Length: 391
Ligand code: SF4
Ligand code: SF4
Image (cartoon, rainbow, N blue to C red):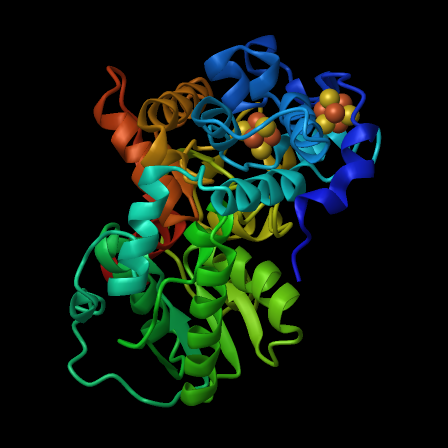
């Protein structure tokens, strides 16, 4: 069960406002241009928009020195919940800024100060089971398979973004599952994983998604669920387990699955001469600790050289889309992604790879509005291009 905001009362007092969470530890960054880490603080430039400021807002609300207002709600929600502050803070003291921010959001929703954009996607999820206001019947239209198996060893949980927007990620993931002879299925009964609701303060609505999807996993009889979306993966791995306990099923991000299959020699890849860089999705990296496997998959392609951005792994700069920012604060989402594209280009790489459809969607939107472009691909797309039969 998640905690109420008041349960963080003592913790918020322990925030010393030291501002350690404004920057990457200089030990890790070569280029001073990229040593700041908080998309919200950088965009708005006020203490209130950094982690320490939101901790102070939490204290003020708990002690009833503050009352919720629209302005206060805008400050609380203009945060991608990337978790970079959480990591930097924990170098010094063990605080949980991310958990405080989510509790703050649940309180604001309860007090009637949630964001209209989030209320809109909540209604869409309740009606259509996706936040994009798309008809549920179209969920699996990207798939060429006419008859979907009702039972299988593996359930590929596609997620809303790749079902309706970045469909190429779903198409390439099933190509890889087919190629590897996996006994899998996808399901037209899949609902939104609940992440957009849980991150924006609509916890009860999120629980309804969790229960539905876990019923589906049991109905399919799956022993393993594979995800190509970092957000869905984190939600099952973290939120589902916290709420529902042991799920009784293995959860694997597709990058972990591919890394293991490649290690076992099951996937033969062609040479591809390219310099690439890799963007760690917050939900996969900082939130689930999956850093090595996507890199192992990329560097298994002969001829491909991976050059790291200055801010990588647990220090990675967020793509700007998470925490409900893409729907409620569009300009912040785009500016944050443009910053990531600039950092990617500074490595000299011609391709920016990632492992999350929502990161790809937002970085593509920013790319369209940037003068200097970079090619953006999901790791699954890159690997499919290198399959031997595609020579
Ligand atoms: S959240 Fe942590 S690092 Fe940031 S100001 Fe507070 S104590 Fe310092
Ligand atoms: S979660 Fe990310 S955007 Fe939010 S305060 Fe922390 S570093 Fe800034």
